[in-house]
Image (cartoon, rainbow, N blue to C red):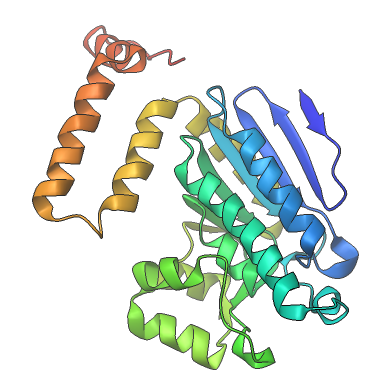
Length: 261
């Protein structure tokens, strides 16, 4: 097991599973420059050939209340400070999106602003029954970051994305599930165990296959039909030649459970 000492997050790597916890409970896990800088570094560390799953959650009652407005307000240049915070957050999100490892976000409480943004970037999103989701940016005269303007229209459609961003509507965990933002809603007391079981299930699979799925889905809305099918053909050919691909097919034909790298 590997643990890295950070100030605003907790990081634990055990075999193919990495756990990252937003760890400023006294500040509602608000994102300041320290947290986003550390999150970008943690995402980089998690992007290794042996990693298969990253579980991201929050400590305390909040997943994250979003940007730390108190930290923003004391900066000599608010705009420059917020841009730096956003840049580091975006580096983390980009790493999570591009790595082969599957990102599971376990939303343990309120996810507001950038907390909402990063919560729904998970490849699989678990929400505690008490969790809630709100954009909240325009309420304080700001605009969305954390990839919200990319993911929300794709997840819920343009009209609902506009409603979330312009009215700051708060969604319960159940509503977020019904809107397609959440994979599964679980009782609060069961969230950690469910995240662990799901992580173990995913970790038993092939990292290369999961990475191919992530890449294909990221490109699906910008490619033409022919471009996307060509990408599919190239990926499945590469997977067929890979050690995991050979093992998977041989295991299926041999009627046994595959043992992926």
